[in-house]
Length: 467
Image 1 (cartoon, rainbow, N blue to C red):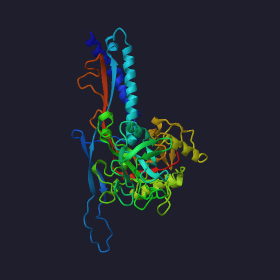
Image 2 (cartoon, rainbow, N blue to C red):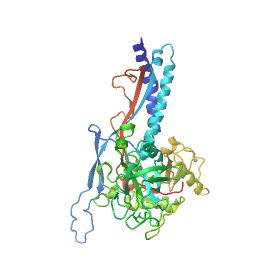
Image 3 (cartoon, helix red, strand yellow):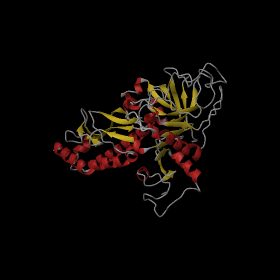
Image 4 (cartoon, rainbow, N blue to C red):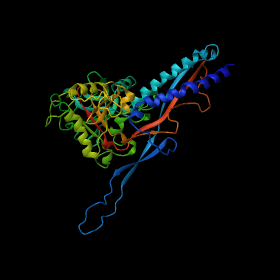
């Protein structure tokens, strides 16, 4: 009888619950609202994606009709691994046994699956922004410090994730990747030098700072702080903060595994060689070099006291400047902005009196501004919300409060393994599986995918804004 009940319950779940849960996930996950799924030929979990890295050089004018030397387009191949996201839930065995006499188990199971859906959506939305090893962006010391002592740095990134990792191991070993040339530090004579094994020991979300454990100090002592000749930050530059250790936060131990996450926007734009293709100025490809700058203008000369001050959002100096830098580098315009709820509010306050509103077309594609509600389904589909310069402004609670990201949406691909996308494990025909040695049944949602930027130079980051 129990077997028949379980079979009947499984069939009811497939018919009335599972498809609805999956459809809802596909409509609500940010990565699908912003970016298109790509069509690829997979070999197991691996796919090779061709990217264009150089133009044909065989093009020029000729006064005497001499033909140019034949050239070819430059191509490279990214090797992309489908990372595995799982969500797993459980139903008490007694509820299953009571099915038939008490059908509330259907409602209970549906509720469990819907809550699991929300948890999977939250994990995926976070990974779209900060998935992988790049956790955010650092750009200025908050205050002078004594050489050899921990110091605070202004930072925009995933503070919650950092604090979760610090609860497992501290400090978090990091390396800094300078956006302007993708040089990596520790090492280098013109950028911060970070000693091996040192890194983030604390993160303060409210203050917008991270504490580096004796990280970037020179021997100059008080007064020179971290701004001596051997450790100079480039004016207005941004440094991607990449976590590289300890091993306990990089592997699958404690269900963390930074090395096994789908790459987010931060990692795609900040890594030196995402998916094996170098973005370094020396020996890399221009098409892989994203724009990144901060609001900071460091005084000329060293040593110089860091200001430790974030600047308020400015439409010309920040958003338009970012657009112009990207266009100058890539010849492409960004077609959307991704930012935080706080920055969105500041943008609205800054633009009061200049925003056009078309109430006749409210809620319809083509309307100018359909209000300021953070409606993900409308905003992420491009059907409404706020915009700057004709490009929509999208909001994610997983974007840190102090920065904006300019995106060219067709430069991104969702590489999804298989033709089923997100789905519940049921290869044996059953959604519910018996838990070994316990009176319980479980169900598992899985998704094999990665997020890939095939032209990072069409995208950019502005950091250092007032929070």
